[in-house]
Length: 203
Image (cartoon, rainbow, N blue to C red; front, top):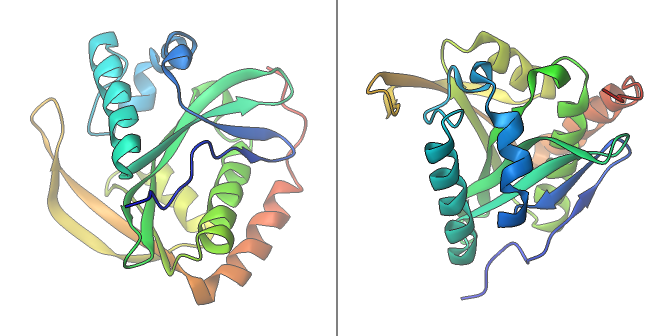
């Protein structure tokens, strides 16, 4: 069966470009991923190089199977990577998928660039793939991430208790959010307005 997301898929915005992950990106991407703050609430601590290589090799394998589509995030102002994101938990039959594994180096937190990343991904999901549902989730205690998801316009659906076991053995409750197709027009308008507030980010 042909994968729902065609390869290569490149999503181009005014400030960022989402480029399909390749092994040639690993070295530059890991230099960013070494910052431990990025992984505080995520299931895998990819600040450790062995875990990073394993996780991102697995992402490429899952892309071949049609289960994941990982991207690196390019800052167009500097032509350098600033983080990564991906589409995964992909179900073409039910026309649904998830946005996740999203991280930016802390230098780019609160710059607004995440809004453009989400605008590009959601536009692709709803307008190219014709998805019915796009899901997002995060640790229930990751208030910064939850606030960011809510600002995008996703609806809170509830908390799944003991949803994940992190690689350090600690269980994690997950807060689930979604956007559905009939909500997309309003979400798109909101996100587009937020991207207009982004300033040139050169650091």
